[in-house]
Image 1 (tube, rainbow, N blue to C red):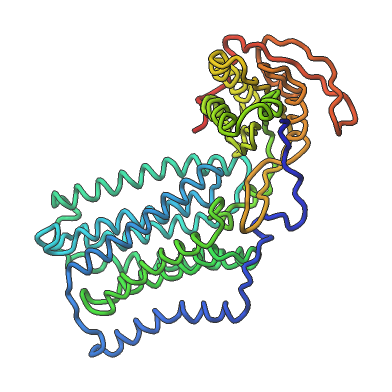
Image 2: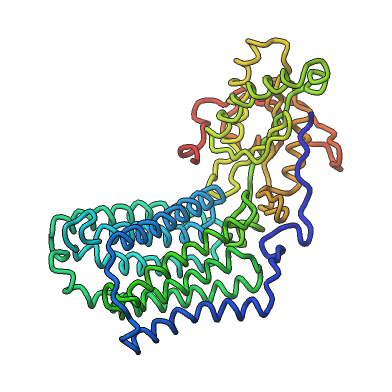
Amino acid sequence: MTATPPAPAGPGSGAPGAARSGHGGRAVVATAVALALPVAGLALLLGVPRLDLHWGHQPTHFWLVLGTAAVSAVLAYATGEAAGRRGDARLSHVSLAFLASAGFLGLHALATPGILLAASNVGFVVATPVGVAIGSLFALRSTRDVSGSAAATEVVRSRRLRWALLALMLIWALVSLAGLPPLDGPPTEAETLPVLLAVPGMALYALAAWRYAQLWRARRQDVLLAVLAAYLLLAQALLAMALAPTWQLSWWEWHVLLLIAFGLVAVGARRSWHEERFAALYLEDTTSGHREASVLFADLQGFTAFSERHRPEEVTAMLNAYLGAAVPAVTRHGGDVDRIVGDALMVTFNKRGDQPDHAVRAVRAGLALQEATREVAVRHPQWPRFRVGINTGPTSVSLLGTHGGRTHTLIGDTVNTASRIEGRAPAGGVAVGPATLAALPRARTSPLGPLELKGKAAPVEAHLVLALEPGAEGTGPPAG
């Protein structure tokens, strides 16, 4: 079976701006009114003190805050994982905004008197405004539109910032528990801190929400609107933290606002197609950028004949044995498995723009795939063998499809040619195009001669790579 590359994207092919969720003017007005209600409620409670009732129920506070922190932590993980897979800088910073809130909210839960600690602790009491305010920095940074190497740099930087955030939370917890300065006084001494953090934090969230509103006007997707609304709710929560007396209804309001903010994003993501839940947030470079990339195709020569002679369960066992060896072999060298269709495997390199040695990685992966599957073939000599084709060149990073089926892939003649080269490779061999060969520092090769490939106006000079010489292993460790 010869791998068939994805068709080129056309207008309305599923980029984030193409899918519309049908929000009309009335929905926008209703959303704006709903977002204004918390401010109105806070003003009413503070303006009419007899309505601002006292309710000091510690268990409810503990579980409400801990549950909100858990929702935010799940969002931080989900957006961070998607950002890593797609190399998206915007989503990386959205993840950090959620992580900052989640970690410090968890610390705030510990401040509940009589639950885990005997009395309130100043460090844990002020943890929430600190975490939400830190999150506003990342929220605003997520609005920047970067591309190419700058986007890849931002993703790497965000990974370091994640570890820095986690370290800060740990240090904050240790200093608070030890009663060390500046977190060594009674909680009442820190009452001015939320006020100092509220003003800049509210301004940053409001600016981030405004920029997301411009993005939503172009893309109109639920998860994008949910993040926008969450930023506005977080801004209002900071206001309530600064003004509301402890254990009054106005104080409980900001706890509920945080839960609603993160819950909205979770619901918006849940309603999005599961393969690309956060696609609406992707940078343009993630969905319609250009990459110099390498593409590897592999399939089993003689697969159709084998399938005709064997029962489906035998074919399935054969494929699982081969793919169980092939997939780890290519991912170990930084390849992204784009798709598996029957016996065909498509693997991309440098889709995120973070692998300057992508051609060498692709060839290493192809040779590793053949070595790993050769061990399987030795145990089953009647099984077909993989053939591999690799090509290097310009591609377009595209998000194809719509709700019900979406995929993030590479498009272009480079992809098509890689598939055609694979179809002409011998079983057990790794064939490469001229651009891939030119990118290899030292390799033992054997010419396959000019190949007349279907759909190509001119023949393509292909070579069979026998081995990479020592020192041609590429630069840097495989991408994770």
